[in-house]
Image 1 (tube, helix red, strand yellow):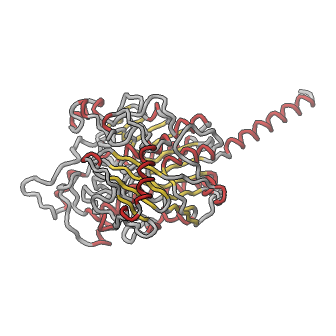
Image 2: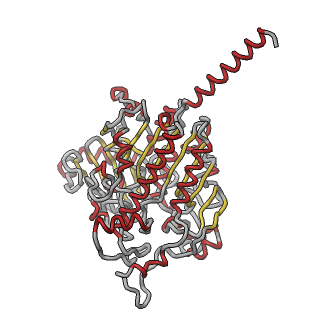
Image 3: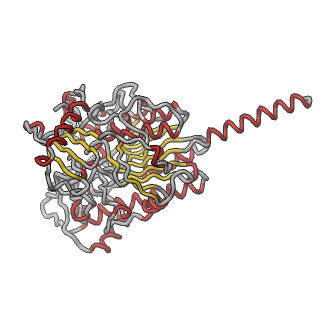
Length: 504
């Protein structure tokens, strides 16, 4: 090779290396979504009983949001908003639809035999999801945990909605136990060393002593799903650490049933002392130490977060990774979880009617922490009002990709400390067709709430969140002009859902 060809070859090699380095500089993205974690369930959001040191480290090294909202007060609908950027007045999935017309969808023995009975109402084919957008931007994408946006064989499964890899629960009803008989590896069932069990059983056997831990032994099986999910997530990161990756870690924790590794349960038994057992009377599986187990589920996951951070740092990935930590909706009211005892709602009421399944602040305002070393200033806090529909435009701006049509607004300026460049929503809107039907508006300091729609109610409640964050004093009669504007906003914010179950 002559000197001229050598120079050209070296130049081409240098150019390709620079291009590769430029591609690698796009941040990896890890989006951590907990299930039914309340605004007050973390120490950095005021929790006094549950220990979350690794998540608190995320907060110390990133930005804490105090006015971040989920897409809905229940799982599937909230995840649909997150995945598509369309709020619940425009989204495809607005509630939990188990598609009961298929047959015995609540029979776990039948679901074990007939996979067509699993899963929920699916996203449409070709839906532009977070995963698909980032695939098109050159990312390798993986989802690990719970899906709930399309039954096996439908167009809504993860591998058809923008994810190269999926491992976990397809069906959110299967996720009602952490010892399931199977999980999904992409579109294939992986059978575990666990037997089929109805996760809505009560402790009714003759002679069973609810205060004897041995009475609960049958609910603990061999393979704990969250261990397997986490191992697969780490394997994905290890496999793709030389290229930009997007991970959705959609853990089912701390959704009931109450099940956690024994070492963590005993840690909190020692901390809390003895307690009244939960025998299954409010749905989901019985539990000898319900308070200790709920706390154990969160601390167990916190421990996993710490292990993930250690791996990112060890592999030299941490400094080029954007990490998001949040929850899909507010705290639950059933299965022995006892949200009021933990003050899981934090600033908000968490009794039944105020958290999950309801559009009060406790049902939709969620903890949110964003970490991006060198980009997001550590130990910062923002009161920027935003919601799940804003994630897609924010990520699109980060990866320099044109954002598809959404109801969202990028809050990248807020993350970068450029508050003067941040655009704001005129208002935020939610609708939820389950139970008796609700709609809500957040407009500045005002919160409008229309409840019992299916019962014919048309009278809106109005709350001044600056002075009444618990939404206990209806001031609609004092501000009729505000109510009228909100009624107009509500009418302008919704189109009829294609699925009749999601209509009000």
